[in-house]
Structure formats: structure tokens, C-alpha cells
Length: 319
Image (tube, rainbow, N blue to C red; front, side, top):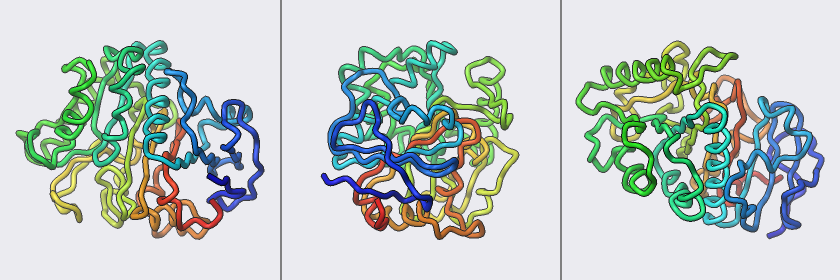
């Protein structure tokens, strides 16, 4: 793989060598608020426990709260390995600091990408008893329905790792969409009182340790769709939609204040079908009046890492 000399951010970029990057990779540091970009063509470090954020350049640590990082992979297997290393490292960090690790899942291809966590060395090295698992959004269908994000996560990931069953917090599928959203919000509030979920001192909203998100071809994240009024919800923790442009129509979803209060956001975006939304999100020609939901992911008290591949970045000529 040949490395690029530029990146998607509009600012002028100056390359800085990372201490842990291979000769074929490069990390590009950028000013506050823009992206740092690394192109990876080989597998990441073999250390079983080490978050991807540790691979940033030395000067990046002081800007972690306002920085976004962009990782581009040649192969899906390398992306999955890096995502597993990132999650396992954060698990070790937060389990040591708070005796709990709060992880938020979503649906789609993200769940398959988590498969490396269910394999050695992570299966044995991770302290799964500390994990508390949530969903950023859920379709209001029975848990055994093919459209259920819970079912997808259980079938492909959670059934293969020993997370305690009482620490997996699924939507109540016996309730209406309004009732399910209220019930899930009340669950979060109780876990905040119990000390399981932290609270951001910056925003006052729940501060999940790791928010794992995907993105649709239209730029939606969780069940926050372009142009839908709920993208502007700024009071509730969990809201609902009855008219999703993508079936099934009824869903519950975390709101942006919750998503943006996370300590770490990992956004996985792969495939040529996502290239248009990626181009809009990462190019300089953006307007605040027509932001895609993915452009509204702005960590207020943490950091964000894009896990991407070359097809997803194909419309960005400077990557």
C-alpha cells in the first residue's frame, strides 16, 4: 500500500512519526478540532491490551478531549484486530479505574467486526465480569426477531464471551415504542445512581466508557436519521421514532447529548457505499444547516476514532 501525503481535513497537515507505527504507516497530526489520519496496511501491534489512542503521536495526549483520529485499513481483518485491541485496552483501563466498563453497541456490520474479542488472546485476557453492555439504538421488535440488534449481538458476539447476563441491558420488547424509550432511560438513570454509569462533568449526561457506532450510507448513526426532528433532542437520554426511513419504522435511540458525552467513540465506516457520506463528513465544504447525523458526532468530554477502509475513503482525493 502506498501512503498518502494529505488527509481529509481542510487544514494543512504535517506528518509526525508515531512511536508504534510500522514503516508503511503514517500518522498526521492536525490542529484542534480536525482529524489526525493514519493509513495502515499491516496488522496493528500484537499487544493484547492497548487502546488505539495510545498509538497517537506524543503531542496528541493534551488534545485528546477535542481530537478525532482517522484510521484507514487495507483489509477488514486488520480493522477488526485494531478495533479489538482498542476495546480490550479500554476495558482494562476502566475496569481498573472504576471496577466497571460500560460499552454501547449498535447494529449492522459493526458486530461482526467485534469477533476478534471472542478469540485468543482477548477471550482470556479481558475481564468480562466488568462489562456492562447497552445499545445505542434498538428496533421495537421481539428479541428473537431478525431485525433485533439484541439478537444480532447475542448471536454474533455476546453468546461467545462471558459477560454476566444481568449486565446486558436490552430494551423491554413488551412495551410500546414510547414506553420502551422511557423504560430504557429510567434504567440508565438507575445505573447512574448505582455508580455503574459515570456522568460527564462537562455535559451532565451519562458518560459511557466506549460507544461503538456504525454509519449508514445516508450518514445516519444509531437511529438518528438525516432531517428527522429527533436529531435536535437535547434533554432526553433516550428518544423514539415511529417513522424511520429504514424499516422497521419504530425504534428507540440514544440522543446526541448522550453519544457526545462518551469517553471514547469508535465509529466503524467501511465500503464504497458509504463514500458519499464520508466525503461530506470529512471534506471542508460543510454547512451547519444541512449536517448529516454523522457530522453531529462531536465528543464533548472524550475522543473519537474512525475505523475505515480505502473504499469508504475513495471520494476523498487527499487521503
